[in-house]
Amino acid sequence: MPAPAIRFRVLGLVVLCLVFITDFGAQSPRANPDLTAHEWGTFTSIAGRDGLAMKWSTLRGSAELPSFVEHLNGAQFKAGLRGRVRMETPILYFYSPQETTVSVKVKFSKGVITEWYPQASHVEPDPKNSIDSDALFHSRRSGSIEWNSVTVSPNLAASFPHGNQPGDDEPNQYYAARETSAAPLVVRTPAGEPQKKDQQEKFLFYRGVSAFSPPISAMVSPQGQIQIRNLDPEEIPSVILFERRGDKLGYRLGGALPSQMKLDPPELTATFESLSRDLQDILTSQGLYPDEAHAMIETWRQSWFEEGSRLFYIVPGKFLNTILPLSVSPAPAQTVRVFVGRLELVTPATAQAVQKILTNRDIEGLQKYNRFLEPILEAMKAENPAQAKQIEKDLDLTYRSPRIQQ
Image 1 (cartoon, rainbow, N blue to C red):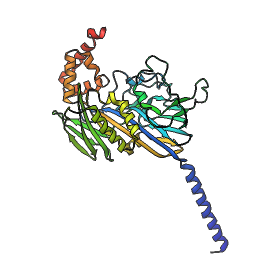
Image 2: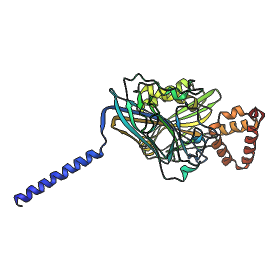
Image 3: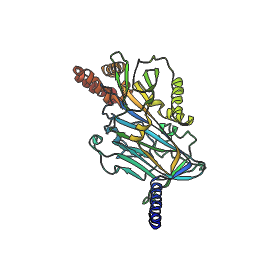
Image 4: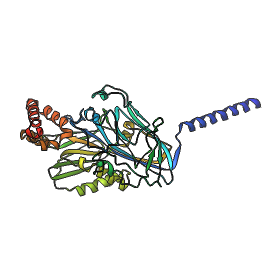
């Protein structure tokens, strides 16, 4: 081959390599070797008769949030939105030895973001548009939320909000998440809203509802034994069966779940202290710092350990990143995400307890199950169709009792 032709071919290969390198670099996110991101959250579902997550909504809103938290379509909108999973209190922390600014985006498969703080740069779908109660089951779009300018400020003497409405300064599950060594954050006011001040917080907070199916099922036998199946190719790192009846509680550690297992109902001889220790060990083994694990448990102490039976499990990492992909730019050197799945179970003990409450018109007893009452009653009626009308009658009479009228 003539020398000019060889030089031309070599030059062409060099140009192609430079184009490839430039293109690859343009597509790769910038990385910050000093930045760390940690996140925890909860996916809450309720198992139907077939063990799979049911479609459900709540009869009342979730636990009260401080008044400064922003809501999609009003504070009570989420209560009536039907889904299979209620994503509760994801908390995203950042750690850095020096001040740095990042942008954050989270997508939510088959879902919508319903609450958040600090103020977001963009929320999809648009909070100004109305959404009907069954929208998640006939829409192919995914929800998302973005914060385009989040300053991680490790040396900031932060002043976190407590709001200006009655009750904002009272103990609230929201505030427990601040008790960590994470760096304070400053989120700038979106362009066009000069009347708002920059907002400070210890974390990025958001919630939502989705129609996706969890990676686990749990069928309850007439004797109360739980048949658990992993529906995902990836191993579920840990499962815990929990039950509470009045002042007594118990739990059974199931360990990792490669495919399936059976668990007997736990003996109600445990304590909150022992359960908290075991939960904290599981959370830290997944990568959370001890103070983050403690903050998560304190945030959910009242809700996780309330009356009834439920299965806790660690959501597999690949499943989580598919359902709820997180993008941070510049990319952290380390990102840890630990989500606890909560699958509520309608066991024979729960059905008997609710039936007794309805028969006795015990409105205070009914309040213990109120958030899950609709799906519990649906499961009871599916199990015993002949009693469906009586269950509805008892429920109606209970809510019309003189104690409610007062």
